[in-house]
Image 1: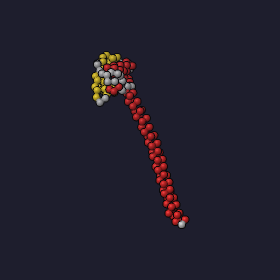
Image 2: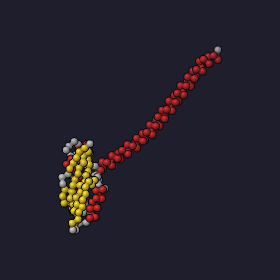
Image 3: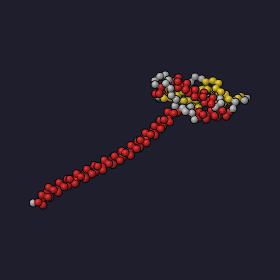
Image 4: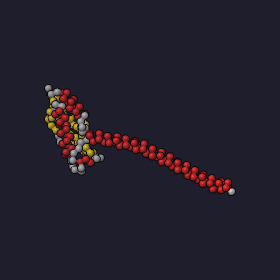
Length: 169
């Protein structure tokens, strides 16, 4: 009778206990595997976040800021004039800046006329614009020579996010 009791009661109970233990072990292994994947994914997402923050900082350093559109225009005009003077150009005239808003961005276009006795000053000016922070892009450029003097004009473009303007025009 004890053999029958062992076969009918203890063996099935041991089998249930064994299967339950195996299921628990499998569950723990799956949980560990899931945690490992989450840790690896968190490292990937952390790297992506850092990369996005670096890109954002890079973009922010290349765009103009100001509380209003006239301030952005004034900042661009001042930077353009300073680069011209720093490279030995004499600013002869500047026009009012033109601004266009689209899709959350403001594009400011500034035209400036200049003169110089040395053509290399113009090259120095263009190099300063190329490395400018915030970024000034050359949209139009002309240079002519009359006797010992060079006369030129340039149209430079800069950008600003309209969200940084605080809704003020």
